[in-house]
Image (tube, rainbow, N blue to C red; front, side):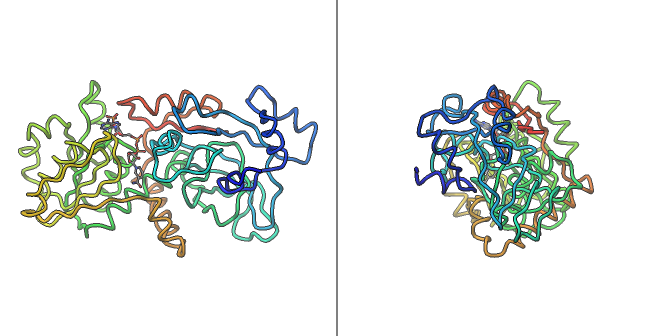
Length: 380
Ligand SMILES: NC(=O)c1ccc[n+]([C@@H]2O[C@H](COP(=O)([O-])OP(=O)(O)OC[C@H]3O[C@@H](n4cnc5c(N)ncnc54)[C@H](OP(=O)(O)O)[C@@H]3O)[C@@H](O)[C@H]2O)c1
């Protein structure tokens, strides 16, 4: 048995999968009906999953495969996945360029919401019908069903829209932490961010607005700018500018009546990040959490010497790991975010719902520029 198999996935792989994989032909594809198998082995549960066995371009490495699920252990939970987004980090994991890489073969997807179908005899904090999300990354959410240890999932409110539940565990949490953990922001303060139309950026706008904090939002120049500006304004953005306006310093006159930002959030890198620094007030902080432009973050010496700017990075996965001993912190953050959702102050990013079996469409669209829509695989 490849040692990797039992480790990477939140459940031990079943014997039937292993024997089939040795033959080089795992049960596979939607054309191979689950019903056919159910007729043979009635008591077993099956799962279809988007699996990668090597790293490379997503089109080359990701395949739909079918497995039997392991039996339910006494501390386990069986889940039906309902919806799971495709995030940039998921693609980086397939490519083998992300900071953490599951051992191969692995199932794609780190985020999503599932419904509890069955619980083991010693599980008393979950009941069938509960909605759950993974505690940590590397869950492998692009699948129809899973059996996992109860400690690897968290209950999430069922009173929020499905798309909010499917996309709450990574991007809104990242936005929440960056707005709370680096500067003590007060109502009336200002935050500047690039990639403002990203899912994280949209959550930043909404959470900041709920805190009474104004946001200056930088987006890339694009043909449908007016539409995007209207959308971000509706979320509560105070001001929206393009990267070329930043470059021409047109922002200076636009934001002259606002207090200088105390916090800059950068998910782009390159010049876009460098320009954010120009607008910050003395002693403020720039947090880098993404590198979409795949360019280094240029920090001029003058920003560090004369403005005493603090430069930080943030990674949600690390925060989750650092706080694993006290899961109540993650629960408290999720409950606060769910309350914002219920109050209509935090909506899911614009989403395109794609049937699970059309996963290629979702992966393709995620890699295209100017999409302004999160691709979400729907297993319903
Ligand atoms: N550190 C963490 O813990 C953490 C957590 C969550 C996300 N992230 C990172 O945050 C970033 C955004 O994630 P997301 O899920 O919110 O993304 P998303 O919703 O998929 O949006 C992608 C964003 O990146 C922009 N973009 C793409 N290519 C670009 C380029 N070459 N130059 C400039 N901008 C570019 C897009 O702008 P256009 O609309 O102009 O294409 C869009 O704003 C990613 O880098 C992701 O890995 C980090």
